[in-house]
Length: 524
Image 1 (tube, rainbow, N blue to C red):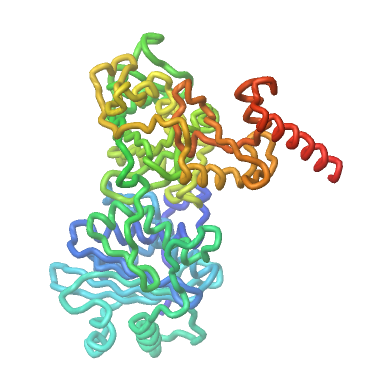
Image 2 (cartoon, helix red, strand yellow):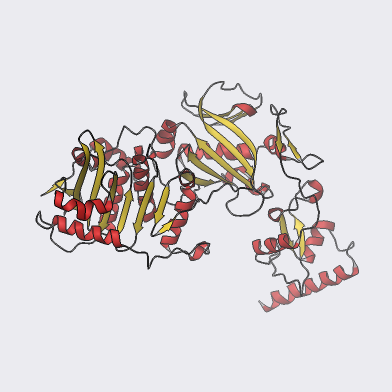
């Protein structure tokens, strides 16, 4: 009855090389990529997910697979070569997820699939478990008996429709050819009747207080936003996932430029042709310093935004493949001094359209990172790409493109090779004084502590001063991310350099502050 799935040797070798480790969330994303591949060309696309301690199920209304393909699909470490436009090419997502789940949580599963073949609508069903050596084994794939279709199959995949259900759970019965279908029927009934009573999704909860299911729900909303916007319905534990885009409606697009990649030599070169700037893996080439690489294949586009407000997820680069889900969000490369530009509320989007390069150079080692929303790349080509984009965004000539005109209405590009550009931008608040809302955000950002000496501040006892990190006189904006709270001592020392220029009131406050610091130190 049971047969061990065969193993693809080349796929196994690649898997060992990649040393790919899965988590609950990454394993889910792997199989969702598989479902998304099956949904290509379909309308009314949907993926339904049940993800609990008792049951794991992923149900899509994709194209399904035929009976004769079942064994090939379940071949361990088998990598499909026919999906050149799918992220699942390097994923082995289905088998990876099944093996991970059966090893760590469950002991039994089955698949039901329906497709349109040359013979009309066909159905396929088989059970899945692990053998004693931990290898995937399946029961003989079969067409379910006709008497069974109305009661079970058609309840999951209605007659005339296509799709696939993978369901994993726990089973204490010994599975034989006589009870296999009844066990599948029992679990199918659980799937059809399942109601979300214990796995509530609390919207807008503090991320630090999220349970694993809420965290997974939130990540799906963020990383699958492009597909959800394009009509894909994703239901997770009874809740429909809504788009939660990285780029907000009020963010202003400043730069939208093409990027090329030249990989003809040993070291790759990233080219920004519109700006006459390029970077390679050994050095930086700008202006006329070195001979330029004139040609390259189109890799995608870089979109550089200025956030209107908000302090979360700034100075990050979001990577996606055109028309598919978000791949990951990376922090700016730390070696390029982005901490010196804390006044810039940047969001950057990199949209790849060369899927071959993305798979070969960026995704083969780890298609689904452990923390997709907060990736700090440390190796591989993605490190080079991320470092190059960070340098581009913090290039002084590029930053000149986002300095406001005296009218405060137009942002002029003044860097080399870009004098022809203009970017519309809302008027800039040139008021020197922070408003009350900004002050509250600044205090929260610093936990009501002085930004220099770290003393706790209290307006009732010790007046708070609000300082421009980049001085206002030097063009620093009056925005929360360019502000910090200071005590009187630190603010006046920064502003005047000594106590001689203080007013009588501030001098008294300053002296009281010195006394308080000394008293606190003695008490400690």
